[in-house]
Amino acid sequence: MPDVLVLVDHDGERVHKSTYELLAAARRLGDPAAVLVGTPGTTVRLKDSLARHGATSVYAAESTQVGGFLGSPAVEALESAARQVSPAAVLVSATTDGKEVAGRLAARLDSGLLIDAVDLDASGVVTQIVFGGSYTVRSEVTHGVPVIAVRPGAFEPEEHPVEAMEHELVPVPIAPAASARVIARRAPLAGDRPALTEASVVVSGGRGVAGAEGFKVVEELADVLGGAVGASRAAVDAGYYPHQYQVGQTGKSVSPQLYIALGISGAIQHLAGMQTSKTIVAVNKDPEAPVFGVADYGVVGDLFSVAPQLTQEVAARRGIA
Image 1: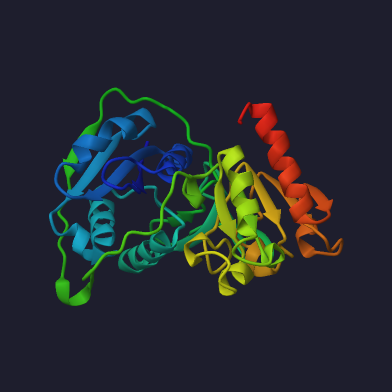
Image 2: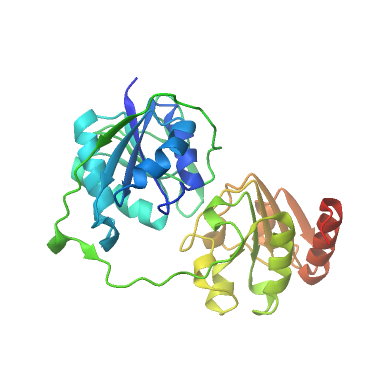
C-alpha cells in the first residue's frame, strides 16, 4: 500500500492526541508514515508511541535550528518526504499552524488542498465543513498529492501496534532569509486541564456568563467532568477569559465527545468551531437562541442555577468531594 504522510504534533516529550487521530485516518488510505520535526533525539523518544498507534515508518527531520523558525521546517520536511515516496496523501492537523503548513506545502507541490476535513473514505473523498459551518460538502483532490488538514477530534485514536518500524532521516534545509524567525518565546497560561483540541469534554462560556468572575461556574463544571474550558468570541472580546481559549471560526475548532455551551447564543462564528462535537448540550435563557438548533440537549434556564446543580450531581456520582 502507498504511504500516507502524517505530520506529528508534539512537545518534544510526548505526541499530541491529534496525531494519533491522523494516524487512524491515514490507515483508510494506505500505510501511515509519520513525519517528525524536532531537535536531535526527539525521534528516539517518540517513535515507540507512534509505532503503537500504527505508524509503519518515521521520517525524522531533526536539527538544532528547527525551534528557531515558524512553519518552514515542517514544510521543508513534508516536501522532502513527499518527493521521496510519492504518497497517497499528506495529513496535518487543522490547527492554526497546521493550516499554514498545509497551504504552503500544497503550493510547493502544486497540489490540491482540503481544509477542515471531518471524515474521509478509502477512495480519498473528504467530508468538509465549509463557509463557517454553514455547509457540509464532499470533496476530492483531482491534481497532485492531496494535502488534507483534518479537524482535531474528527477521528478516534486507535492503537494499532507495528513491530518493525523504519526510521529514515530527512534533511531540513532552512533558508533564513525566506523564513519567519522566532526571536522570543512566552509560555502560555497552563493548568491541569487538558488542551482544548485534545479534550474529550469541553465546557464553554459565553456572554451570558456576565463577567470574568462568572467563569468560575464554567471552570467548576469542566473540572468535575475532567474537561477543558472554552469561551465564545463575545466572552473573549469582553475580557471575561483569555483569547487562547476561544472556540470558533477565529479561534480553535474542537470536536469533543461532549460539548457544553453555557450562556452562548450560538452565533455562526462560534458554531463553526464546535458543531461537529459528538454530543452538544446548551444552556441559555433565550428559547430562540440559535445554539439550540445544533444542540442534542437544550435547557432553557439560568446557567447560574443549572450549571451548579449539574456540577453537584456529577461530583456526587463520581464520588468527588
